[in-house]
Image 1 (cartoon, rainbow, N blue to C red):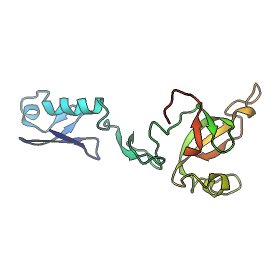
Image 2 (cartoon, helix red, strand yellow):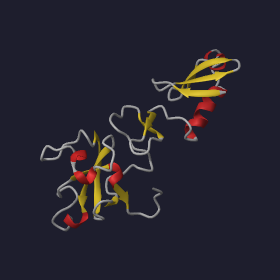
Image 3 (cartoon, helix red, strand yellow):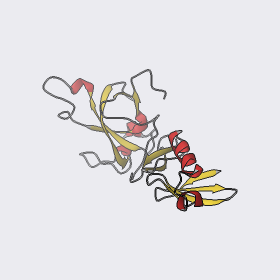
Image 4 (spheres, one colour):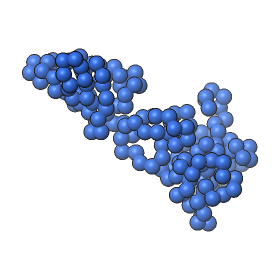
Length: 178
């Protein structure tokens, strides 16, 4: 039995006995067992198993490619712009270190814009800075604030944000495999 995701939140299941379309979120299958007899069929079960195991994207996801390492990853169905895999992604509040300066920063967000598209307040693209030359122009920009700028009077939302190509920042926690 072979299962492949379609672009419309459904899956095609190919078997020796035929090819069927499964809508996991609706709980339907085009096979006779389900359509005629109304039974939960092996095709629905197989798709559910593969989604749960992480072998297929869920109905609200699609296959994307990490802009840093090129590995296939599951991303939200409606996501646009460059995407990151779990290994290279960041969440708001993550403590990171700048590879170029060694300084500590706090992530505020990952943008949907590439380093060659994102412009600073000066109007320069992020990838045009000499310190970013070693990083991919296709990478999404991560906005972060310098930890030294934070204090009782200045929180993460008040501090000045800076943009970095995603691979320029590395997590500070030892548990994360980079």
